[in-house]
Length: 443
Ligand SMILES: [Zn+2]
Image 1 (cartoon, protein in one colour):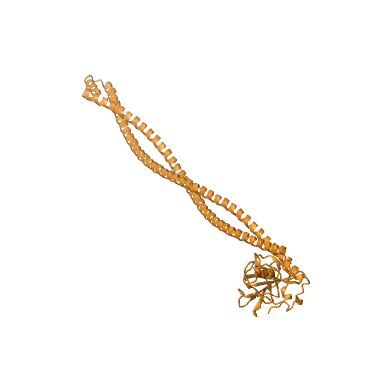
Image 2 (cartoon, rainbow, N blue to C red):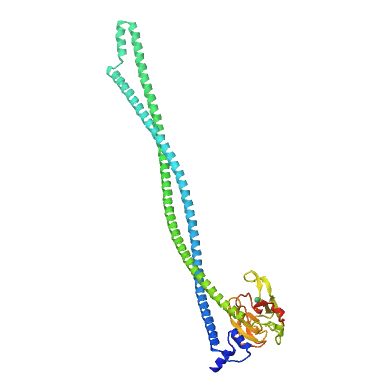
């Protein structure tokens, strides 16, 4: 218990107390109020770290959720596009079918008028035929009468008259009778001729009638074919339209699903952003606290040369080289032109896990994780001089610990804002970042 207390006393975290002690150059016992402040600070730091860790877990979960939903929403978008394409194809198909249907309808209309015309012709033909048949019947009846007359009288009455006249020797009457007889004969001949003509006419009309009946039959068959085709097209249109309705329904369902996902996504993104903001605020608070520690470090004449043994480079390897100098540069991650506050060095033989050593003796004031610096160590060397060693893979000292020049404070790595294993070495004189190569040389 007593050793613990002494350890804590020697290696304790807040520098201002240390400086306060140093300024008296005495190994006095720590006051209970200072101890309380240290405890409070450490407790706060732990609480903050816990909060940050919890927020990070929540953020990772949300990020995963959002990624899943985005993935699903993009799958839905693909499906929606597919349905849209199907709908377009169906609409095109329906338009094509409608066009075909109207062509067929035109043909049907044309056939209808042709059929109507033929029907009128047939009707006319039938009327003509009926008239001709009547005429034939009339002439035929007349001829029958004539034949009956000849038959009943045994001979023509003109012949009888002629025979009678022979006896009277009246030749003038004979001539009249001859004329009469000729007239009779002519009338009979005309009747026969008319009968023949009408029969021929009837034959022609009948032939014409039969042709028209055949033609109308053909037209009616064609008409039926077209009507059947029209029905087929209409059925196809009905099927396509019902498919269209199905596709549109499916599309609406998918769109609603996608909108629901997007709304969820928005809600989760908002929650995510809120958490990230609170996380960033926590980190900022933490980092401000660290800045406070650095700012609260020793103040003085900041004369490194006056330090015994001067300063040594943290990477004590013969193959060390500068990978990025102190000064203004385009940030390798953000691309922003800004001050690079330290010097980055690497080893040709590999930097990961290489020992990072204290540049001079001092007290560890920081040994923690930082979003930008990664695992890093801050050492207060007194007289306003602080050195920082960042992006380590692991830490080898704790806050409050005294270190001698060359002690291993950490092992190099690539944590925090880093693109590869290196040691970021920073020198602050009374809080201002200066070029480390002005104070220490590479081995
Ligand atoms: Zn750096």
